[in-house]
Length: 143
Image (cartoon, rainbow, N blue to C red; front, side, top):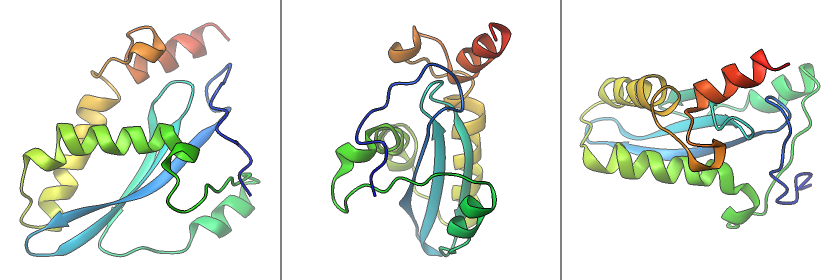
């Protein structure tokens, strides 16, 4: 069921998270999988995993931590626009500009993009031209 119903409005951090999986190609190791989780309020990537294969642990983890899952229709990116936008930006700004020979090369590049650029330096007009890290810190200080 689609619980969010394209309502991406939030009033505080950690109120709504969105997640998705995208594919990244390496010349030696083939297709690899990047799963990302984004906080809708701060635009911060709060978690991600990059692997050579997909695993099915998420459903059990969500149940264990009482996370309500919302599923978008297959082939309908508008239901999950926030995370689709993130993956599109990441591909334009990093992935498509480089050729990764191995999984390890891609993994390092993704880490640098997320931890060194996206969360800490990339500003977003939707959060008053702050970085996701700045937005989260401001929200925590005002709590």
